[in-house]
Image (cartoon, rainbow, N blue to C red; front, side, top):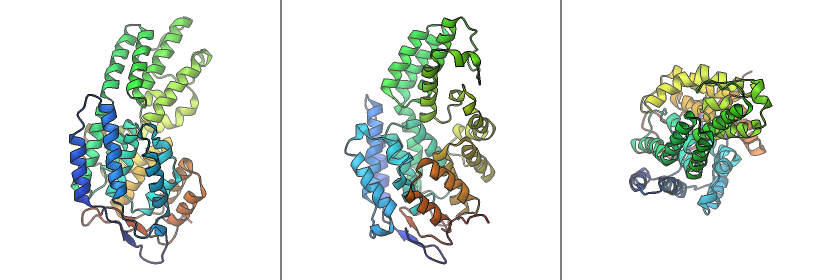
Length: 380
């Protein structure tokens, strides 16, 4: 990435919108097989491959992060079953350098982010990020439809696992905790990254342990924090592992934040700032939040330490105002360092604090919504 004084430079990179759009329609319309889990992941990977292959890097030296990440992706795509989205995207410094080599809110980059997560089995996170990215104004129709389809397909991929989980909760409510846990295990074989299932498994393990120990059982939906009885249970480590698994795959699974006091701060942010806005967004992902609501959502993710979500939501704020603001830099820096603390990311953070920075364009937004790419300034 190169810096220049004065006005930021937008470097064009050719991705054919009509071709990418055609692939979206063809791929998603064909995913109606008996094994939706495999089909959805395969379709997401195929679409990601199309986006990556159509990147026209005329000067790869100007895009070191994107060039390096393309190599990472091409290597990972050789073995789709073992593709790890955390290694390929969430904690990959090449990805985050590339993320800021491209103008914030780039339609292709947003869709690519979601597809790589979905291809790696992170359906809930892909769905959440697609809902966040739908808040970008001026997204071309076909890419907007791609994000809507991601929301739908992520849900469809987990449907069979969720059906099994509902059977498990019914068994739990009837006091059949062993049977419930067996159903959750069956569901996790269908979709290992199902955050709801992981939480329910932990909760049934917790209630079973309480019954076994002759301790009082809380009502369904009750949340316990800093519970001494919980801390003394022999099954505590197994329960906490389930809750941690739930939070990893579904960071908005609030019930999975119960247990020790270490989760109190993120839980407060989720309850106080995130969920009031998220519930409205979840009710209709097509509806745009107003700027105040989007800022509240971004602040909530920031305070909860949900780094990937905080960066994505902050990007939507930047894209809406068409430029960076001074308050962006410390927030971007904090979450980038948390996800990928490397020299390459530090260089990107320094670039973001400069007077001007060149940024590429994979797919231009609609006319009037282009970024005025000026990076945030460090607060004095």
